[in-house]
Image (cartoon, rainbow, N blue to C red; front, side):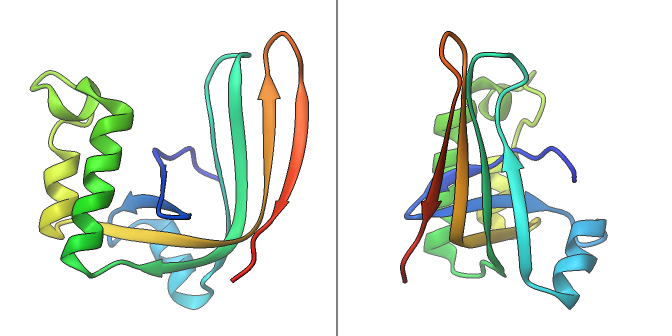
Length: 124
């Protein structure tokens, strides 16, 4: 399991990675995966999504996803001193692999004043 930046848009979870990364090699052999993302504090929401990961090639879908990343992560992606500066443009240009996980099921874990767990099933 590796922590990743991810965005939820259009009914799917997206993440970007390099072509030499272990996750890319794993997905090449088996497209079924589990993705976890969330906060690094004991407040907010963590999610786990189970589904099939597919590479995204369509320029329009890549652009919408890049905009979702920039909207969610703001200055980290758009400011010259941001940690992942330029990731949105890298996604748009296709210089990084972009995966879409079409969810089968998922879990949401609420943290904070009240802790909670909810299970989701997605229909296709």
